[in-house]
Length: 438
Ligand code: XLS
Ligand code: CA
Ligand code: CA
Image 1 (tube, protein in one colour):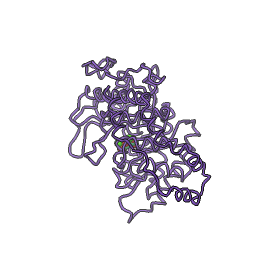
Image 2: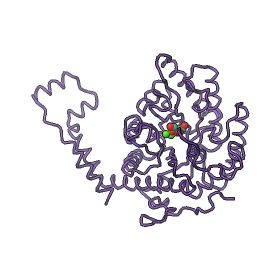
Image 3: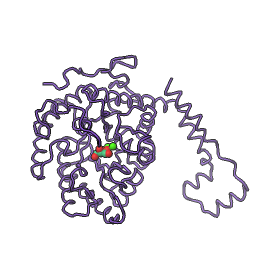
Image 4: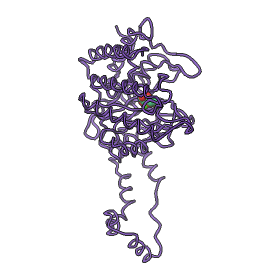
């Protein structure tokens, strides 16, 4: 039985097409910079937004029907109906990956032993579904923020017992990730932070988080997980202050606690903007530190101070993202649509329209980023901008072979420095536009 019976397999029809159920830019076999689009863009479906969330917000209940034919939600029958719907959805769109939290897959029971039995059952069911498809897990994670026991955090909790539940959930989520062929494992520290320093020992909490991550790495490697662990930075929401504020902070944390060999970043666009950065900024910071692992593809609304998780529509941002990804030589992870339909977009077609929009936006971003690189003017400008460093003195400084005295003597000899070359921002922005709209 199909859930989306009125929706066909989504074809590529090109930019002229007016068919809402067709790709305009995502042409999976088109080769760009020597690789197929589908290889550049390993897209993933987020179980939680696509199969679980149904439009409930702080002020109102569900608008969408996500029962997928199951008589009662919150049952194992419903959990299986979500698997069936999810696989049909991914196959129709040509999406080859999914991401999940443990409790997206099954209803959580009061007793963790029961939840774990349910997780075994559903993962067997998913494994069966995966047979004969190219679909597999991009990354898994444990939801360590919804259950009330995590009100004060998971790795950062004040309670030893709660800490053991975080450990138990991570252990199980790692088992599931390996079982389902996951490329990565995510730590998003939603409640790892604080509301007030009046009740918080930050150093103690951070050491405990690092310890938990070390145990996760040890366990993951012991069961054959060879992928990357990721930290997904976010500065706030739900906590007032979250420890993984942004990429720079998270990378510093990983280095401080000796976790940097096993971890990379999973950068979410909307989290970067909440941190007061651009999406491109956090991608660049990750990339230059060798830690750009995976991407949560969405966008926020700069007029709002919270995480709106909108489907990506902004081609400028997607182009800048793909520029970073191409320069990085690709991702070991993928592009997870951690994005949700707007509450009034509640029909099954809307679910497809949203993914078509997101996939087309990134495909267009890829096409344009490749054109920008091929155009070469931006790269050439940057090279020229730093060209004074090619001088003998510049090279000596770069090799750490100078002293302040020597440089001061050089400055004294000059008496005054010429102004550095123009930054040419407007010139460069107009190149960007000319490539985008040619
Ligand atoms: C919430 C996060 C979350 C992570 C996975 O803001 O984006 O969904 O991606 O726990
Ligand atoms: Ca988010
Ligand atoms: Ca996310």
